[in-house]
Image 1 (tube, rainbow, N blue to C red):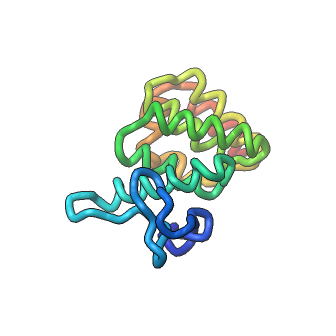
Image 2: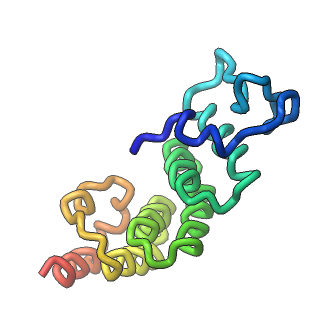
Length: 154
């Protein structure tokens, strides 16, 4: 599912005239107003931060926000979001996979491999994507990556 403002607008509702983030909500929309110079990515980051300030455990918003932080190049912040997701959803293979990606982007191969192993143990099975995901480039260079694939693809 692609996340748009309509998908999560209900989570960011505010009374008219009350601050939403650093903006003032109008009666027609609770989302921060998007300025002409603000990119879509910046808008979404602000928007989802507003939602998370009201509901910090909103898993679906955390997933999108973590992805947006990664797209922005804010890998350390994305890692913190992924750690939160794993804490909230410890049996979710995708949460562990995304955690592995965040560690790999930060060149932290050991924790990336541990998170990837956990994702595979929990049932992550998109091996084709795993082999091509650019976020895992640092991990794929490690021989233990190929060993993991051999172990779980069998």
